[in-house]
Image (cartoon, protein in one colour):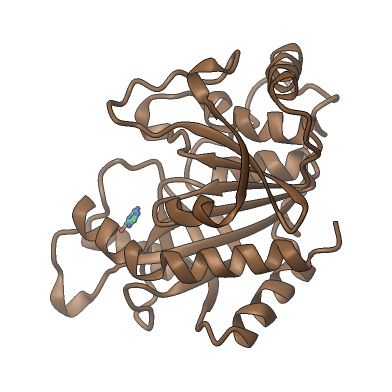
Length: 271
Ligand code: HPA
């Protein structure tokens, strides 16, 4: 895998010579984030050697290299989900490439379902911790060049950056939550008993992404900031079917605020 990562990174470097410090995975709802950055290059995933090939029709898959205030960023517009049938190594491959390209901080965003009854659709939550109920992406032989065999996960979400981002949201008058994200494979949404179970074991939200990528980011010694838009909320008293359309609508409400926070944060980071 090490050679594959190097080849992907070399290809991207051959397209554009830009130093990048921050990698961003744009989840549902953050699609318009790229409207506000200075874009230098868009590279479709299918052109990048060893990148997973998308089999889903209409799947937006582009790596966007650009700058905010002179700071190099690399955005993934479109991510790979385990439920699509990719292996965990494929799902997390782009994070390995980011590391190879010099990224120091990964900002991973997503849409998730609220299991904390105080949460509302359209809320933004900073992820302070997670529960992984998917297969671990580090299963298999460990290449010490990529990271250690038994990485600690106790400080996976960088405290300093989290505090910085929250202070920024406060200053910008953007309300936010902080909580625990639970990662599950999907693609089916939860049964009422599962939502209840997830709440009981300490989750605030549940989603089908992010956890594999941030585990690999941490294995690669990247700093991580995780952000979630609450697209739907489980309520005991009014159990309704969760649908993909509902999720997309819920996300639209908060995408702009999340974009603003990420943009401002990158401007103020000292790397
Ligand atoms: N469950 C799992 N994943 C999700 C949900 C949910 O309710 N909402 C958005 N992604």
